[in-house]
Image (cartoon, rainbow, N blue to C red; front, top):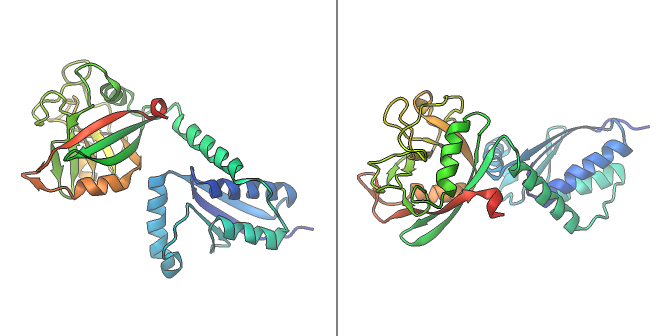
Length: 287
């Protein structure tokens, strides 16, 4: 007879191998000990994981000091620990032993990450920044083309364009402390011009995506229905932008690069040394 051991809740990064090990262990236990577990599993992007960890650290305090891995398991609301801790718990409670090699979970996590990127309703893009000729790293965004298809389409055309209408090598001309970083003037780099891929301006599509977090990306404008090529990335939630600027997505990886951008020295909101959008494109084509 199996008695319920209760609620198991697991949070983990989509691309973390141990997360997939635990996920599969829970699937196995659901088959071998029917009804013993009531499980909830949350697969998170890197950014969502960092956000989750920060919230949990405030909640749990000391136990998470130096928590370095990409998965966290709870039983009956109590923190069990990481992947190895969960497997130890499963062994003690259910005599469960896992013989699968690490390479198996590596393949699983790669596949899960690839599937997440290939969500047909979203576009996942990358941007590589260079400051003062030094590479800063890569930022990855998830854009919601199911919500703002025209806005995302214009942005992606400028991202992957090989013509003179392109974001590659353009300047990020403005950094507003506690506000946002802005770029996308591929014509002069000063911020004076903002021309769409098709030429001219295009209307505000909708304001469905909210500026509710750090790393929101959207189109800069000069008043209603004046979207072109200029865009911004927020340094924090910016509810005052809702209804005025069309947001199109969020950072899912590379938040530390945004931290570094925010600390760049400026003069009159312009970077003292050039901040360049060195390379960019659709992640699916770069993998």
